[in-house]
Image 1 (cartoon, rainbow, N blue to C red):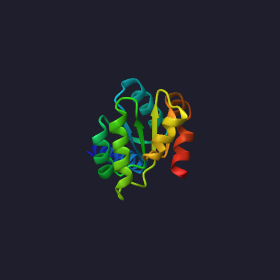
Image 2 (spheres, rainbow, N blue to C red):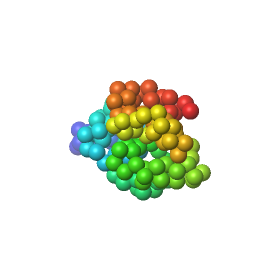
Image 3 (cartoon, rainbow, N blue to C red):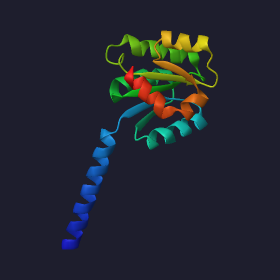
Image 4 (cartoon, rainbow, N blue to C red):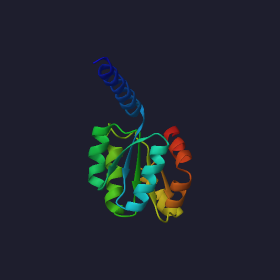
Length: 145
């Protein structure tokens, strides 16, 4: 009987410490419809000790940002740029979400596209290679702004 109670106590302590450690980790929202890049970013964010909530469609991003209390948003503009841009503008227009930094990314990102995305609500806009290669630095930079 004593060993069963000790195992239960050990499990409870392990569960509680794991739960509270995960709750204390920052939450990132990832808007991405492309499987490979979503998987790569998920792995990198988890390695950087972020909790992650993946959103599949731009309209879901605004709702998730309101309810999930994310620290940062990563938005793939490749799949549906007009809807993503609209979601970025909605995020910036709402006082409850306007403060959340947004890193917009896509396969190709020229100067005009970057400037347009920043003007419409992204904190910064980078290409896919940059976000995969320099994610930690980009997160730090976005959170400083």
